[in-house]
Image (cartoon, rainbow, N blue to C red):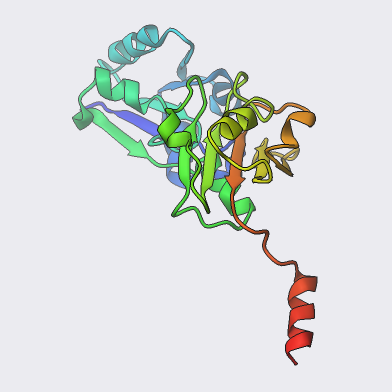
Length: 225
Protein backbone atom coordinates (compact mmCIF):
# COMPACT_ATOMS: atom_id res chain seq x y z
CA UNK A 1 0.00 0.00 0.00
CA UNK A 2 1.35 3.39 -0.96
CA UNK A 3 1.57 5.90 1.85
CA UNK A 4 2.13 9.54 2.65
CA UNK A 5 5.36 9.98 4.59
CA UNK A 6 5.38 13.31 6.40
CA UNK A 7 9.02 14.08 7.13
CA UNK A 8 10.03 16.82 9.54
CA UNK A 9 13.10 18.51 8.11
CA UNK A 10 14.00 20.45 11.25
CA UNK A 11 14.74 24.18 11.52
CA UNK A 12 16.71 24.37 8.29
CA UNK A 13 20.27 23.07 8.44
CA UNK A 14 20.65 19.39 7.43
CA UNK A 15 22.61 18.68 10.62
CA UNK A 16 19.34 19.04 12.54
CA UNK A 17 17.36 16.53 10.45
CA UNK A 18 16.80 12.96 11.64
CA UNK A 19 18.54 10.31 9.50
CA UNK A 20 15.17 8.59 8.95
CA UNK A 21 13.76 11.76 7.38
CA UNK A 22 16.86 12.29 5.23
CA UNK A 23 16.64 8.70 3.98
CA UNK A 24 12.93 8.99 3.15
CA UNK A 25 13.54 12.22 1.21
CA UNK A 26 16.53 10.76 -0.61
CA UNK A 27 14.62 7.62 -1.66
CA UNK A 28 11.35 9.35 -2.57
CA UNK A 29 9.96 9.08 -6.07
CA UNK A 30 7.46 11.86 -5.37
CA UNK A 31 8.46 14.78 -3.16
CA UNK A 32 6.27 17.61 -1.88
CA UNK A 33 7.48 20.62 0.10
CA UNK A 34 8.09 24.34 0.22
CA UNK A 35 10.20 25.90 -2.51
CA UNK A 36 13.18 26.36 -0.21
CA UNK A 37 13.02 22.73 0.95
CA UNK A 38 12.74 21.46 -2.62
CA UNK A 39 15.70 23.55 -3.76
CA UNK A 40 17.72 22.19 -0.85
CA UNK A 41 16.80 18.50 -0.88
CA UNK A 42 15.15 17.45 -4.17
CA UNK A 43 17.31 15.44 -6.55
CA UNK A 44 17.17 14.76 -10.26
CA UNK A 45 14.53 12.24 -11.29
CA UNK A 46 12.10 12.96 -8.47
CA UNK A 47 8.63 14.20 -9.29
CA UNK A 48 8.03 17.31 -7.18
CA UNK A 49 5.25 19.66 -6.14
CA UNK A 50 5.82 22.97 -4.35
CA UNK A 51 3.47 23.80 -1.50
CA UNK A 52 1.80 27.15 -2.11
CA UNK A 53 -1.32 28.86 -0.83
CA UNK A 54 -3.39 26.58 -3.06
CA UNK A 55 -3.62 23.70 -0.60
CA UNK A 56 -6.44 22.04 -2.59
CA UNK A 57 -4.10 21.69 -5.58
CA UNK A 58 -1.40 20.17 -3.38
CA UNK A 59 -3.86 17.63 -1.95
CA UNK A 60 -5.04 16.73 -5.45
CA UNK A 61 -1.45 16.22 -6.62
CA UNK A 62 -0.80 13.89 -3.68
CA UNK A 63 -4.01 11.96 -4.29
CA UNK A 64 -3.12 11.36 -7.93
CA UNK A 65 0.49 10.43 -7.13
CA UNK A 66 -0.59 7.86 -4.54
CA UNK A 67 -2.10 5.77 -7.31
CA UNK A 68 1.39 4.73 -8.38
CA UNK A 69 3.81 5.66 -5.60
CA UNK A 70 4.24 6.69 -2.00
CA UNK A 71 4.64 10.44 -1.46
CA UNK A 72 7.09 12.16 0.87
CA UNK A 73 5.86 15.49 2.21
CA UNK A 74 8.58 17.67 3.73
CA UNK A 75 7.51 20.07 6.47
CA UNK A 76 9.65 22.52 8.42
CA UNK A 77 10.34 21.72 12.06
CA UNK A 78 8.21 18.98 13.54
CA UNK A 79 5.12 17.77 11.62
CA UNK A 80 3.03 17.77 14.81
CA UNK A 81 3.53 21.48 15.44
CA UNK A 82 1.62 23.80 13.07
CA UNK A 83 2.38 22.07 9.79
CA UNK A 84 0.70 20.65 6.70
CA UNK A 85 -0.13 17.52 8.71
CA UNK A 86 -3.47 19.05 9.76
CA UNK A 87 -4.54 19.46 6.14
CA UNK A 88 -3.35 15.96 5.23
CA UNK A 89 -5.44 14.49 8.05
CA UNK A 90 -8.51 16.28 6.72
CA UNK A 91 -8.03 14.88 3.21
CA UNK A 92 -6.61 11.40 3.81
CA UNK A 93 -7.08 8.53 6.24
CA UNK A 94 -4.51 8.43 9.02
CA UNK A 95 -4.04 4.76 8.09
CA UNK A 96 -2.01 5.86 5.06
CA UNK A 97 -0.04 8.61 6.83
CA UNK A 98 3.32 7.91 8.44
CA UNK A 99 5.04 10.71 10.34
CA UNK A 100 8.77 11.09 10.90
CA UNK A 101 9.22 13.69 13.64
CA UNK A 102 11.63 16.57 13.42
CA UNK A 103 13.30 19.16 15.60
CA UNK A 104 11.21 22.32 15.70
CA UNK A 105 12.72 25.79 15.72
CA UNK A 106 10.87 26.28 19.00
CA UNK A 107 12.81 23.41 20.59
CA UNK A 108 16.07 24.73 19.23
CA UNK A 109 15.37 28.23 20.55
CA UNK A 110 14.82 26.93 24.08
CA UNK A 111 17.95 24.79 23.76
CA UNK A 112 20.03 27.78 22.67
CA UNK A 113 18.93 29.58 25.85
CA UNK A 114 19.53 26.49 28.04
CA UNK A 115 15.96 27.07 29.17
CA UNK A 116 13.63 24.18 30.14
CA UNK A 117 10.32 24.41 28.32
CA UNK A 118 8.12 21.85 30.09
CA UNK A 119 6.10 24.64 31.74
CA UNK A 120 6.20 27.11 28.86
CA UNK A 121 3.11 28.19 26.96
CA UNK A 122 3.63 27.76 23.23
CA UNK A 123 1.67 29.94 20.83
CA UNK A 124 1.61 30.69 17.12
CA UNK A 125 1.27 34.17 15.65
CA UNK A 126 1.94 32.70 12.21
CA UNK A 127 -1.09 33.79 10.18
CA UNK A 128 -3.21 34.15 13.31
CA UNK A 129 -3.54 35.95 16.62
CA UNK A 130 -3.95 33.76 19.72
CA UNK A 131 -7.00 34.27 21.92
CA UNK A 132 -6.65 36.82 24.73
CA UNK A 133 -6.93 34.17 27.44
CA UNK A 134 -3.89 32.40 26.04
CA UNK A 135 -1.92 35.64 25.98
CA UNK A 136 -2.85 36.72 29.51
CA UNK A 137 0.02 37.42 31.86
CA UNK A 138 0.74 35.08 34.74
CA UNK A 139 3.59 35.66 37.16
CA UNK A 140 6.60 33.52 36.31
CA UNK A 141 5.35 32.73 32.81
CA UNK A 142 7.50 31.62 29.91
CA UNK A 143 5.97 32.12 26.48
CA UNK A 144 7.31 30.69 23.23
CA UNK A 145 5.92 32.20 20.02
CA UNK A 146 6.06 31.47 16.32
CA UNK A 147 5.91 34.67 14.26
CA UNK A 148 5.35 35.77 10.67
CA UNK A 149 5.89 38.95 8.66
CA UNK A 150 2.95 40.75 10.27
CA UNK A 151 3.34 39.64 13.87
CA UNK A 152 7.00 40.37 14.53
CA UNK A 153 9.51 41.38 17.18
CA UNK A 154 8.17 44.92 16.78
CA UNK A 155 4.41 44.27 16.91
CA UNK A 156 4.08 41.33 19.32
CA UNK A 157 5.50 43.17 22.37
CA UNK A 158 2.61 45.65 22.15
CA UNK A 159 0.16 42.73 22.12
CA UNK A 160 1.72 41.23 25.24
CA UNK A 161 1.85 44.58 27.05
CA UNK A 162 -1.85 45.07 26.28
CA UNK A 163 -2.50 41.70 27.90
CA UNK A 164 -0.83 42.63 31.16
CA UNK A 165 2.80 41.58 30.66
CA UNK A 166 5.28 43.81 32.53
CA UNK A 167 7.42 46.11 30.34
CA UNK A 168 10.61 44.68 31.91
CA UNK A 169 9.78 41.13 30.80
CA UNK A 170 12.83 39.66 29.07
CA UNK A 171 12.36 38.92 25.38
CA UNK A 172 14.65 36.73 23.28
CA UNK A 173 14.51 37.21 19.51
CA UNK A 174 15.78 34.00 17.91
CA UNK A 175 16.30 34.35 14.17
CA UNK A 176 17.71 32.08 11.45
CA UNK A 177 18.18 29.25 13.92
CA UNK A 178 20.63 26.52 12.80
CA UNK A 179 22.01 28.62 9.93
CA UNK A 180 25.46 30.25 9.83
CA UNK A 181 23.88 33.69 10.31
CA UNK A 182 21.86 32.60 13.35
CA UNK A 183 21.16 35.54 15.65
CA UNK A 184 19.75 35.68 19.19
CA UNK A 185 19.04 39.08 20.72
CA UNK A 186 18.06 39.66 24.34
CA UNK A 187 15.92 42.68 25.10
CA UNK A 188 12.71 43.56 26.97
CA UNK A 189 9.13 44.04 25.86
CA UNK A 190 9.52 47.78 26.37
CA UNK A 191 12.74 48.06 24.38
CA UNK A 192 12.08 45.57 21.55
CA UNK A 193 10.08 47.93 19.27
CA UNK A 194 13.11 50.24 19.00
CA UNK A 195 15.27 47.45 17.58
CA UNK A 196 15.35 46.38 13.91
CA UNK A 197 12.18 44.43 13.12
CA UNK A 198 12.49 40.65 12.87
CA UNK A 199 9.76 38.37 11.59
CA UNK A 200 9.46 34.68 10.80
CA UNK A 201 11.47 33.93 13.92
CA UNK A 202 10.96 32.55 17.41
CA UNK A 203 10.22 34.90 20.29
CA UNK A 204 10.54 33.76 23.89
CA UNK A 205 9.20 35.95 26.68
CA UNK A 206 10.50 35.14 30.15
CA UNK A 207 8.99 36.62 33.30
CA UNK A 208 11.75 35.43 35.61
CA UNK A 209 14.74 36.96 37.36
CA UNK A 210 17.88 36.75 35.21
CA UNK A 211 20.14 33.78 35.91
CA UNK A 212 23.30 34.63 37.82
CA UNK A 213 26.48 35.05 35.80
CA UNK A 214 29.58 32.95 36.53
CA UNK A 215 31.13 36.01 38.18
CA UNK A 216 28.12 36.45 40.47
CA UNK A 217 28.23 32.80 41.46
CA UNK A 218 31.94 33.16 42.24
CA UNK A 219 31.38 36.25 44.37
CA UNK A 220 28.65 34.48 46.33
CA UNK A 221 30.89 31.49 46.95
CA UNK A 222 33.66 33.77 48.21
CA UNK A 223 31.26 35.54 50.56
CA UNK A 224 30.00 32.23 51.97
CA UNK A 225 33.56 31.07 52.69
